[in-house]
Image (cartoon, rainbow, N blue to C red):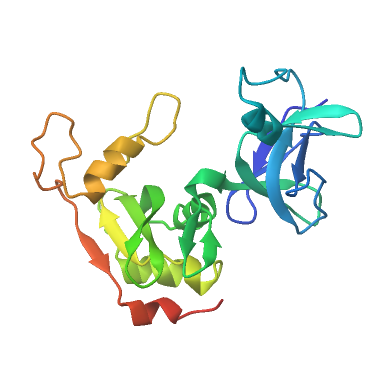
Length: 222
């Protein structure tokens, strides 16, 4: 069996060479090409969660006699059979009743020549429940604006998925594993120093934020 590989393609992480991986719907059945569901992997699967029947039933399924684990990643099956991972189900942003998966938006923003790294999260919004916020680490000497990122993303994303708030940061903080430090992100969004040694309320060095009006949210393709 060939190892999994990541390929460029639709927004998100596109993987191939994964015969032990499927995408299932809410009933545990594989979704057809073009469908979106939860990533399920076979292999060395634990028997259960100790004293937690509900979590066990939610995490482990059996399909055609094979047990699979569902780690909580939302994915889409492409027409060619490859799988695009869109992001964690728990990180899904619900804006005006529409679901936005951060990984899909991050994949588009990271393709902008002025973006070194980025993180997309949902922030509270009085009208829409949540709005899409992008924390962006610009490339050296290439400052970016919200308008530029929206124009860049508009051809690849529906209008409701476009970032409505931009916060520029000196660096996207990540753990050694490569995963984003969400505690750091929370401090940045709260207006605190991104440095754990900094005093709460210190300005974020080199950071700026810009939002569009609620009326602007409806602009663009859906």
